[in-house]
Image 1 (tube, helix red, strand yellow):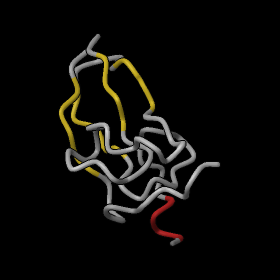
Image 2 (image 1 turned 180 degrees about the vertical axis):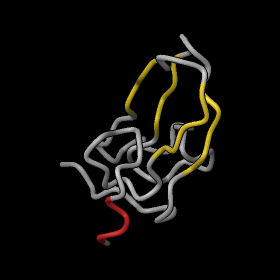
Image 3 (image 1 turned 90 degrees about the horizontal axis):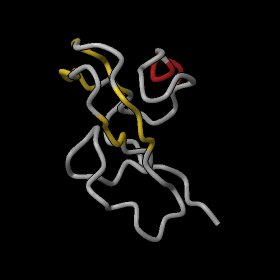
Length: 80
C-alpha cells in the first residue's frame, strides 16, 4: 500500500535542466535533495518519476507533489 507523499514545500523548485539529461523527480517528498530523488522513498510504495529534459532551460519543478503535470509545477499549490 502506498503512503501519501510529504510536501517538502508549497512553492516550486527553480532548477536548471540540461537537454538530453535524465532526471529522477522525487514523488514521495522525503528526499533531502529536492526536487530530485535520493532514495528516501524506500518502503513508501512511491517511486520517483524518471524523465529526460527536452531542452536546456530553467524549469519550475513541483514542490508540493500535487501537480497535474509532473514533474512540472502547474500551480496546484495555490489550491492547498
